[in-house]
Image: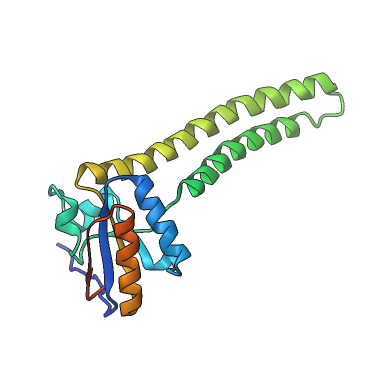
Length: 187
């Protein structure tokens, strides 16, 4: 059995639970607009991280709100996921095309053969890239769906003073955050 190496700091933290990714995302955007750093905002870690830290026990969001052992993860926006998907799909398309072009550098190759090789090399690579991009998106959506099924998506926000506490709680409540409160420590 491993020893718990969780570090706690004496900076209060606002915590809330959200029933949908959309309301969570809007709350986080408003928190950042209000001056909170993305480094001050964290979500509950994924299933593997939860099992590693807490074991394979059944969990509910309300049980982990104030549990300092609850693993944390960074928020990933829909825009960032779109960029990732585009990068994966596009990267594979260009990789396949580039390999096909390299193969066609032979001076005896005709233009038509070069174009055909690029199409043949780029097409399957683009399909592979699209499939991998869809898998990344599905993993992202499954992460949030699992949390919703277990009581909601947890979010913690470090608050350095009373004004930031008030502001974080207000923003989370405005976006349908449930059980929004502050505890005196953060991880």
